[in-house]
Image (cartoon, rainbow, N blue to C red; front, side, top):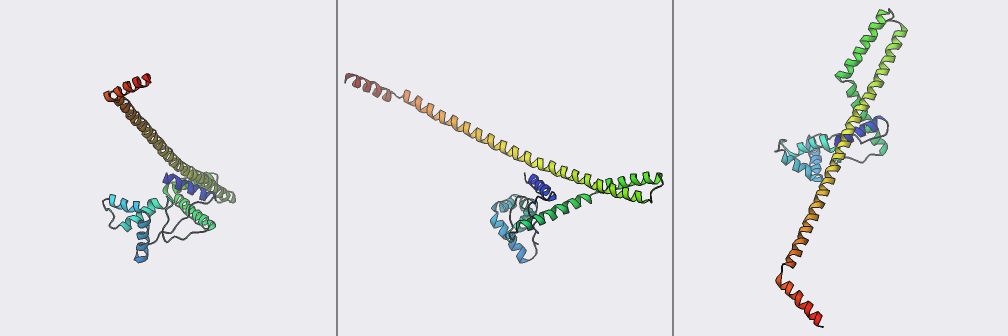
Length: 225
């Protein structure tokens, strides 16, 4: 769910719809940085429990707090104590910059660059065989190819984010299903327990000789009246 939400924020930012604010992470160096993570631990007791459950793989809880915020907390919308509230415009601007940086990382990936280079090689080979490699038309064709390639890859990138967003939706649906199953099971168990208690009380009343005798005497007395 967390990864799906992050992908959704990325899509919104790339499409100019805004998203979560990208927050600069404080340094662990110095008293100021340590104080931030101390306050983060105080505001999020589950993070401190998480550090203990890791078998103290991190030397200090502050180091684990920094790891937790970078890996999970930021995407979950948790706020750092020193973080100042930003205006919506500033938040959208920061989110857009973060989204663009992520897309730039995608464009610099080995897969992207290799596909781009192979396309240019094929284009240049065709232009060279036609003996127009150095012409103005060849340069225009190279520019057109680069623009079309970038546009197509942007669509592929959005598609990949959409798939990741689908993972979040599936996680939310699974979580809702588990919750519903748990509620149904607990309701059934409670109903069965209530029925068992009621039946036990009924049987106990039917098998109580003193209660039965009182019933007979009471009935005879009322009949005599």
